[in-house]
Length: 314
Image (cartoon, rainbow, N blue to C red; front, side):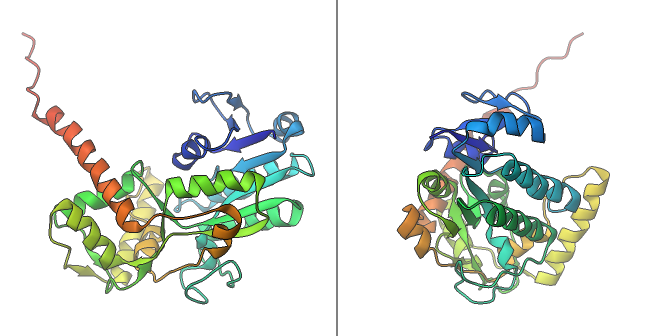
């Protein structure tokens, strides 16, 4: 089976390449095995994908503050892949649970739950889903939860804030957060190449915001956070940072981030388990792994900070 993959140089993509033999499509050389450079124009894609049996489409934008960029990358790029691949070519598309909206129609939600995209990001993902669903008879649309893993720097920042006692609880902290480990998602993506048809939810067990912080703090050896910040205030802070992005400052907090941590969301994944062999690990084990990696990273930095300054030249 001839399989191509977009987004192979990303965090999820690199994991997927461990489990499936696929040819990476890249805009510039990344040093990946068998990679093919393309500008993703119709002519280029049509020539490259003429023998494709499957395309794993992971590439997309999470610049939550830039609606135009998300539409260009999440919607237009998907359309280009779909329109310029063979009719019987299967598309494995990385979507998001964001398409259900911030307030779920039912909890726990599953593939049949009513969708309600309510942000530029969720709208772009849902529109891309519709393109795949409408134009490709063979497809697997993967609605992926909040991905975490040792390589995700945003979580290192959260661990750092927890360690220093500076991480606030958004709202009451009783809301459930749908995390899923990057390696578990990668295995399901790889399985989707040869199995499955239709839409699948890929999420792990949902634990409350306070439970997640407590698990991390236990591993860090510090007390769990006690300070609360209102959801409204956290959302305002995210909005202010998004506005700052117009001046070239990448926001550390966005309204999408606030929703991930502060909204109550839980999902069922039975269909993915039965048809793709998806089996998410326990969040306890995932957090232990991340804290272990965080400590290694910190220990690597400390010697650099303590190293003596170089002598000044006369």
